[in-house]
Amino acid sequence: MFKKLLVANRGTIAIRIIRACRELGIRTIAIYSTADKDALHVRMADEAVCIGPPAAEDSYLNIPAIVSTVLTYGADAVHPGYGFLSENGDFAEACKRSGVTFVGPRARHIRLMGDKPRARRIMQRAGVPVLPGSAGTGVTELRDAQEDARRLGFPVLIKAAAGGGGKGMRIARDGQELTRFFPLARAESEAAFGSRTMYLEKYLERARHVEFQILADNHRNAIHLGERDCSIQRRHQKVLEEAPCPVMTKRLRERMGKAAVRAAQVVGYSNVGTVEFLLTADEQFYFIEMNTRIQVEHGVTEMVTATDLVQESIRIATGEPLGIRQKQVEIAGSSIEMRVYAEDPDTHLPSPGVVTNHHSPGGLGVRVETALYDGYRVPVHYDPLIAKLIVHADDRSRAIARAKAALREYLIDGIKTNIPLHLKILDDADFVRGEFATDFLKRYEGAPAAVAAPLRGVANG
Ligand code: ADP
Image (cartoon, rainbow, N blue to C red; front, side, top):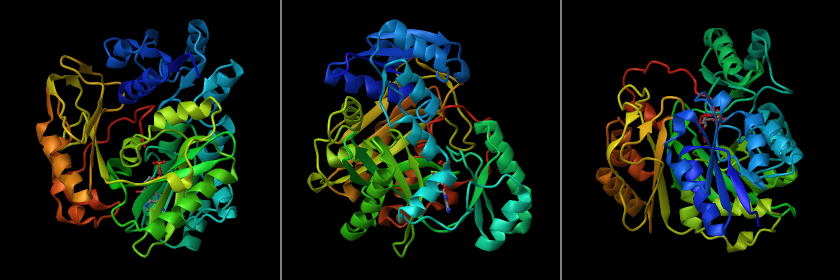
């Protein structure tokens, strides 16, 4: 087992990793920017090192600064969490070259899945269903996109080849929209990812987002831990997730799970990963992407499978074989995660500030992952995700009741949060019946909010 692990992240996921390390007897090093000097992850780690000013580029995304901290402080492993450098092949490679273990997949798998048109091609060849879309390596010019759209038929979804966090993504319903939106999406992609390469995909109107949790070791064993339904989204970004998916059947889980495991095995993937699909009402499913890291919503899978995914990721990184076989995986009860954002519930604009009167809910089946405490200042520089409230109960209706009770108990004064939106979702008759698709949240959208500047290192999934 590792002796000392550097947590290359901040906020709730940094704390989550520190907790896992404590149970495994691993010492931890936190890194932080000057904006985070009072952050909880800094207090909780065994050691903490300031690595730069607030801007993520200069701190949490600063590969040379992080690698030199690893070497100076003698860490033998690095956990990247989600967002920031978690899907950066150069970082994984830099760790390896410095002789430390990157807790995650190999650099080439990160790069491969980060190139979405390439990932689509590989999946297609492996017999994993993908939606009709741009062929080859993608498109950079409008006229090529127009040709693809003619072949696919509208509506189409314009996507960034290097995409993430819903950035560079636009629906085009006709030729005029394509002409208007393609350059906008391409500019967004260039600003966020430094890439002008885009691709088109047939847009599915009423699909669910259903993703499978993969565990794969360095010895070619791969299993799935069932699915999560992440259809409750705003602007292609998840807001509330649950496991299992309310419309899942044993047979469909087997079919989709097999495809997800195949997706991982065909490239020789190792560590934790998530294979995302769109699922239609008539049980057709299509690969959309694979995320090569722990997801924000990993907690709901942990609750229904009684597995600690962060500890598993660390064990796999030490070279241990998986301790669990596919047949032993059982899904028990129902779990819901609500992402709590520091944002104005009406405008969706970030609401940074000092937290006063913080009380987080508790009781049977209630889990809160947060970096908040009384007097903590939510910084303006990073993702506004401030807490994840996760509930678990014997069945879905009890989980909904528990989620509502816990939300009502949650006290966060001083800043605005999206807790009111979660209460609306949980009271919605269609949600309660499990009848929803990725367009569900449109019904609760008022006037469109002003678009905030894109944040680097956003926790997108
Ligand atoms: P990102 O990596 O930016 O999060 P994804 O490819 O994972 O992008 O897609 C994000 C979300 O966008 C999905 O969860 C789904 O709601 C929607 N989406 C993606 N592809 C399609 C599609 N072809 N048709 C309909 N919705 C889609």
